[in-house]
Length: 65
Image (cartoon, rainbow, N blue to C red; front, top):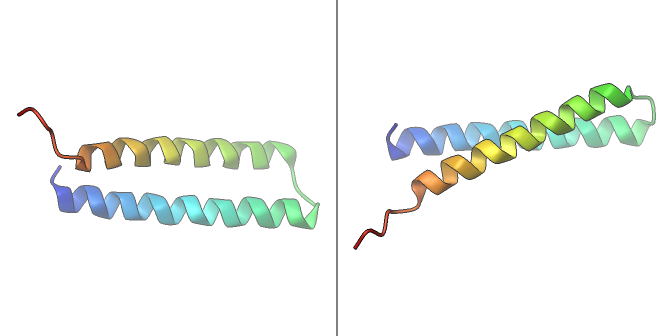
């Protein structure tokens, strides 16, 4: 995977992460939500965060000098 592909994928994950955050906030704010659904969304959000961290680490140059 080249740097451009990593950056594109990273941006898609960031958008999904932000969207999930908005959905979770909206569900909690309206107080009419399924606790299990919110927990699943939060778990998905954490997985996205981990994936983003891995991709970001791939963009850091290797300093084997």
